[in-house]
Length: 265
Ligand code: KIV
Ligand code: NA
Picture 1 (tube, rainbow, N blue to C red):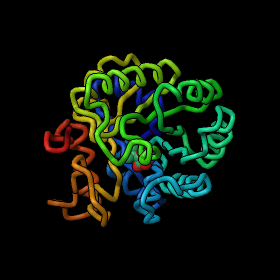
Picture 2: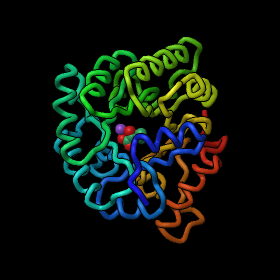
Picture 3: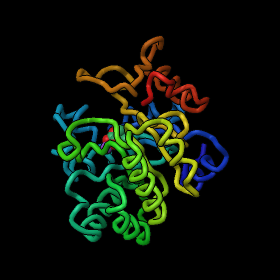
Picture 4: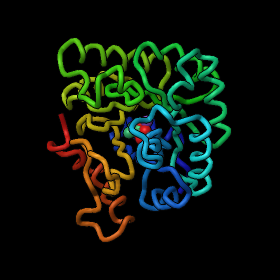
């Protein structure tokens, strides 16, 4: 199988074929995710929570993200590789963001992900014009947990929903090719997805209408000891191996059976 490119992801969106994205942090799991058909591996700053045992993603550094990106890239060749820009590595200026993105791209990332709405559009454009594909991330943005007052559903009221829609359109205009929506009511995420021209939406707690889905690997496998969100499904239940759990996730995303109503807001 040929490596997945941004062009192929755009075709999947246009054809209505769902994109299966999953976090991965090391070479062995990267190989496993690849053989189970995962399209996009996200080296998420969720590694602060699930690998490091931190209470939030805030302590994760650019060096950590480089290390895990290099590890994942050694383990696979087909999945498209997206790496999170950690807290503080892109907030000062577009130039700082470019400097951070360059380190992640040199480590093997094919796209960087950053959190934030319209206020990040200038930074997104700056990166895209310089050859760095960008995945946006709106809704519940974990790097802003202290500002948001906890891990809560976003865009519940009319003004919040309108804000999210304006954010999505601004990020698309700025050139983001993918956009994660986290903890957003399914109806709001569906309306945003249908209003987009080219950017693919990837949901996590954002309902079944997104162009793709993402989960944290440790949540999917049921090995994270902390509290898990409503949108998580433990795919090890009913599976006889890690491979079959990940394969079940991929097929449930592809056939639209995940997320089910009980995973949605
Ligand atoms: O860090 C992460 O794993 C993420 C996904 C949950 C989207 O940002
Ligand atoms: Na993240």
